[in-house]
Image (cartoon, rainbow, N blue to C red; front, side, top):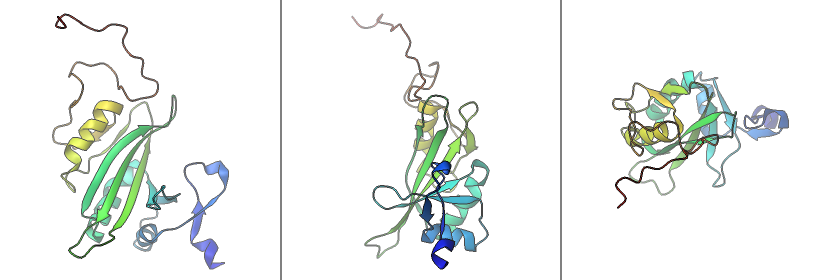
Length: 179
């Protein structure tokens, strides 16, 4: 019975009905009143993964920062496919002086394709600066509150989001400066 209390249905494929064991970070969040998160399958390295709704990203990220997750190793995005959701992910690490094997957690925020918006975590982790800009540039996810959200890889006048799976490449390439 206690084993069933520590498991929840997976969020990646809700119809699968599989149970996912609640990890220590998700358990800590639940114990501290953050019910608006859902444990997902651990990744291939057994890093705990948690699904967070866009409106709860900042409160949960702030709580994790206060809990000791002081390093944003990676922020990125990916596309689940044409017509499906976009995902913004955050790989957080708890670093201290004697950390041989630091605690890690990955947050995933699922966003609609039409108007993907969520708050920036730049004020918590300055490392989010260029990472959020790159995710914006490639997927069109808008990070509200980011101090300088603009294209970083593509030209400012580029139309579209090149890493979305439904992106159609332009049929033309300007070669005026090629020779």
